Length: 323
Image 1 (cartoon, rainbow, N blue to C red):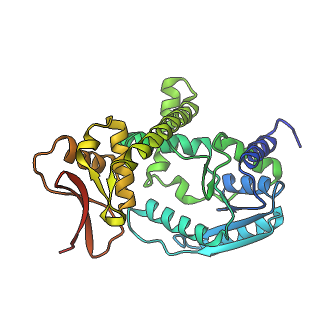
Image 2 (cartoon, rainbow, N blue to C red):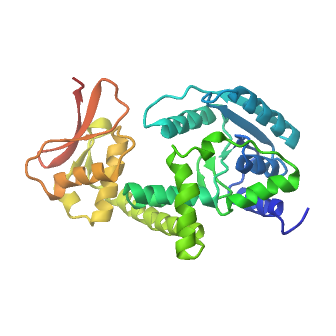
Image 3 (cartoon, rainbow, N blue to C red):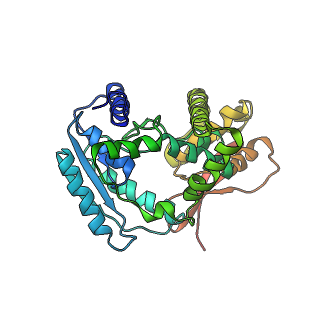
């Protein structure tokens, strides 16, 4: 094996991840595409590996594609390979719904082991651009973590072209997902239109620069999260869904810390999928209080809606039935 070739580069990246996050075994999410196929080939040489192949059943012949990926995983040396058929819903649009179904299936099948995902530096750059376009704040621009238990992403510092070249070096034939060329999907247009244009206009290195930006923002954000956790602990009263936040004390906090306290409080109270706009609206109950009503926040509730409001000098969470 060429010690400077693509397979060696992938092996170095996965080995470094393994040294930082030790364990006896791991799973790898395998689609059959170049990124996950190359990751699987390398992972099996380093640690006992189980391949988890999610069949979204969104395309004709998906079961056959999944079975080919399972066979390839076993040929590469995986100790086990499982096909996980899922039903994709509609909440959040097709991309978000498929992602939710996929992660739920992987979570249910991993049997306590971490799951390696084949996200590359290119995926990280696309994630940062998506967050920038949506205006969803620094947290979204921070991109994906290399390890967000149980999810591991050892290839975040590796370009997608390296995984394609690694498959060629190993004689592997990756599956070409037609969805990856479908311009109806936002990520596809970012990948095929926006990033190449940025590379051309700015003279190259854009993907690497976006990934560095994500790292810097994530490091700053983690520091602010620690400060917010310490500050919020002294401003909460009650417990569970009845936890309240002291409005006067919250108003004295720096804005970056205050909004992180609000976010954590909302999530602990049952909110989910929060946007920067919603957090700012709740923040206005503190810093722009004019007697306004509560702010609806998304939650997993079916017959009720979750609200944040201000009562008797505190922020409270309450529910109202859906009409």
